[in-house]
Length: 213
Ligand code: 5GP
Image (cartoon, rainbow, N blue to C red; front, side, top):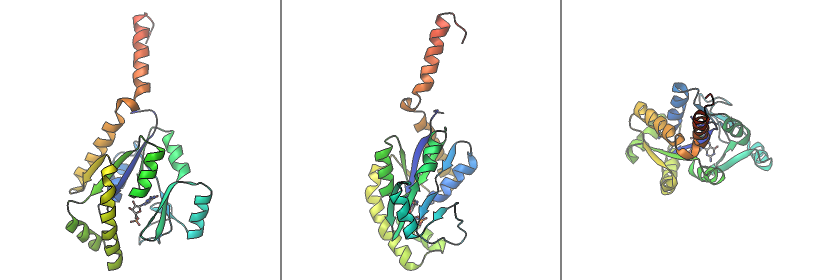
């Protein structure tokens, strides 16, 4: 594992299961992942808790966070603001964890500009019909909201070429392991591991000189 944090953006259509994938990663590998909790002006859904799914803000509070530069990025989505609080992410990046942001595409591209090493993953259900059925089945959205999310999904698919990997969420368990393996492989790239290879090289030199290693 590299010795500094690693930023991952997980995006995808509403109903793609990206939220569940993220929570599963944290449950299965609690030492490896940290989840960023976003701020939003949308209303809590049943079962959502302040500070767990989101920090729920008024429009005025959210705009104050923007003015204070307290957000790494923010975007509007279906009439509400969403944004990533800066402090938590910056703190986690100093540790060795992989920090996951579950955010939409406009925000993802802003994050990639600020942190070019960010890994961008895009999650989709196997088909549009399955996406529609999952949105309806969730039962938390009005037909209008389902419709606007399907409209929005068209826009999101337009931008997903910028992402590094497409994750097809057919079976949750397989999908979680696939995401975990992709993240681990990406973290193993030489450019993220330069300090480790440097240590090994230095130890080799010490050994050749007869010094203890
Ligand atoms: P939902 O209302 O379904 O929880 O989220 C709606 C969309 O907003 C999802 O695509 C979600 O990934 C995105 N989102 C959640 N938090 C953030 C954030 O902090 N920044 C941005 N740009 N998008 C976010």
